Length: 574
Image (cartoon, rainbow, N blue to C red; front, side):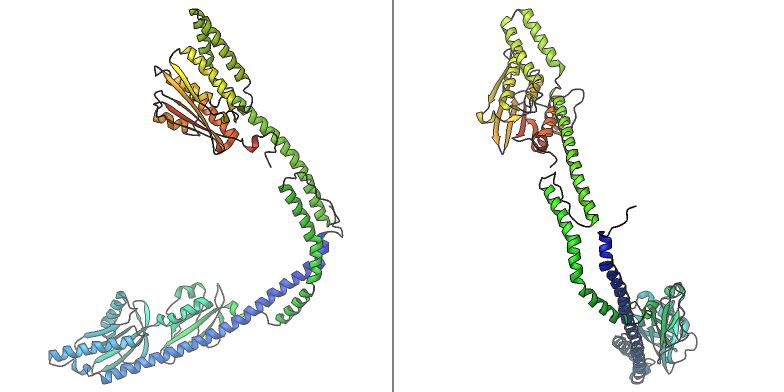
């Protein structure tokens, strides 16, 4: 294993960069933790003060409720008149009393339920707060009628009662066996603190004077938190540790416990902040030296490498990085880069040659897929002319056949001028017109500027052959129309006949670019489409539709330039 020399980038930067950075990171983390600790201490203190103030404010509201109930009982004459002998007086008194109850409940947001109960008539009047549900009201009414007033209720200060599984504070006043009372749901004490606790990660839990919680029972049980009547923070919990302190109410038998995660009150001191400041100043003083080292030993070698990449992208595939007195890691990278570019260039040449050879072989294969029935028909025609003594027709046919074969055997060329394809078409159609005497004719509309366009051989011939094969079998006389135009940097060719056309299913199959013929059907159309795709990609097209003349219309689109990958004088991989 090679040992690192003095030029190693690791040995150069370890004393100057790595050690200061490690020390700086350590000190930054320590200082950050210290700042967090101090902040958490302030948050804990603020939460404790908030908890204490909230208990005091709640006590004030509870006392105000009691005082208001006392004044209501004392000043409300309806309490005396609800037992009047006069029915109208009793009804009026009840309405006035109900109105007073509703006014009282609307004036105290802490109240959940206020009521009067006449032991003599067992009549209950009540009003409830906006947050009360029908199920809650039903449970409270059941408790008052079935539990509280079936015994001997004792008027006095607030006391804790359990109604439908929830804890409430209850206070009662009594005058001549007519009770005036109020209920406050203890769990609602936490509502104003919940928003603050969700933002600061503390929890407030309300309990009775025996430290039995009225809420968060599952959380307290899962974490093994024990609540005590202590105004100082104490540690508790089994799964996670929490600090807890309690504020006891002076007005009612309840407590409000503040629960804080242990992380709020742990951490080192804050002297590391000064150390962090000193180290930061020292690090700033070293910046010019570090900048010079990084520029010389890192930035400049990377710029050389980046320049090499840009040269490669611009087309200089043989670009070589000049070797310099850089750190040995960069020297090895430069040597590997130079070696890689040479190997890639050689691989690209080999791959290029392979691709070109495969493409040409495939094109040759497509171009040589000539159906055997053409030769069988040609031989049959020659035999018939000879047998019938038609020497002139025989001579002409053999001449056309020789021209046809010459064109076919030179069709290993990738592209031929359009005029040569037209001459071949004339030869082929002349042979067929001799064969089908008087029943076949053709019309060419070919401008001179289209005849020099290069295109694949047999690209038009295949569609003319389809006309002979299909239209001639169904019509007494068939005319083939061939037209060519230059437009939008492409040669547009149409082949049209007046035959009987094709079925919709046949047109759908032939226009499907992924359709593959079976048992030699439509092999010419498929060959043409594959050849055009190899040479021109998606820029070329073959569209087959019904002709207005009654037969079939074929539209060929042949771009004036082939795909870059098919050019023999350029690198197709650049």
